[in-house]
Length: 552
Picture 1 (cartoon, rainbow, N blue to C red):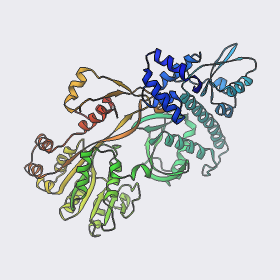
Picture 2 (picture 1 turned 30 degrees about the horizontal axis):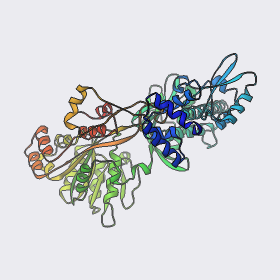
Picture 3 (picture 1 turned 60 degrees about the vertical axis):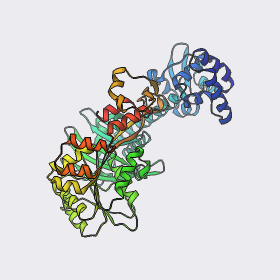
Picture 4 (picture 1 turned 30 degrees about the vertical axis):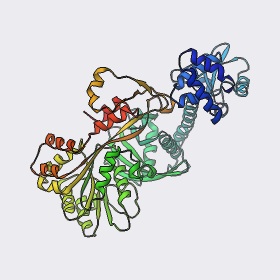
């Protein structure tokens, strides 16, 4: 590619894909950085990966194939040692009576071509162009699938010989490691292992969306499920009741905690592993991604001497991350902080953490009464689930404590209504509540493949009042780097409601939600949807994604 820069530029320019100025700028950057000009064009957003590599293939006189459509030919691959394929980054595509067809990560690598040709002396090697990153993807996928085949065969042998599954050298344990590693590398937050009538399906929740990553024969599930339960210190004989456990594993020289939950189903126990990564949760408050005004409001509320700060949102919306970030922001040697959680997910320095134990009679309300006798300055309640817990939280706030907790409501304003519905009088809600933060997680558009576009006039008219000046809209496309989803990673959108004197008086009088919203907006309150539209207009996420997680 380096020797063909000028010709490639002429081709791209003639096709109207880039201007001469754009290509020359990228060419200059390529010379200074050593990065290939095609990659620079992709990084700058001038071209997609597909456009660049199609042009390169044409320039070299090669047919181009989309690996997402063709994939790897496993029959040919089985004739070659996987180590050879990975060494030369070579991917078999097809064969006929005369040719064996391969694509390479580097189509100019003559050494790789000669090595592959020697493997098929009776046929001619035909080379086709493709996306090099997809070559790596499919090679890695094939390598994992081959290792899975070997492991599952070993598991069947262990079953036949009634070999113990407790050993870390067992095939079952190796399979668990592969599952966990694949999920971690995919940036998954949860792993779902689900038995069906004829198989065992493993899914991972990536960027909030479940995706199947493995499928095994049904006979693999019993030893797999039992070994995971043993790792989580659960009773493997108990299959009629839900159980919860926890264990740790090292993945790529990094320790991860896994929270295990089991649930009896018609075909066996459904296992869910929540992946707990301290580096993702124990972050600074300013790194959460709050809009500047929302951060100012939320941070100011944390400096209050007493009162309740509530975090709202559905399960999986990042409330725990925000809660721990808040604790990190306010902890210090001059403050006594006690938390009551179910379960304690992460250890926080200078914070006394208590785990609820329902079986032992240690409920949220029971722990909270004891906590108050420990002379705390700040109390964190993992979740307010009932009237009694809420009542103690309100009393604590009114007696000089700062209380942080979560509540399941659709939005920040809904927390006020929910508190009243749970039995707290409005005249107690008003003086105790100081702020409510509502949040969601939206998937971020993949920076490698997103494309600019203009939404329809009707779509624009609906959101026009929330748009900043000169909005730029992008849509998801899909590439290898985002597993063809069009999205890569997630970002928080939020709303922060602070209780001023006017709002407090309205709450006391029993004002409607609409009346409270009008007062809040006059004070500068902006909704989740507004924050989401701002992220759309700056190219961070898509309009469809904001509509998926929030509402107008």
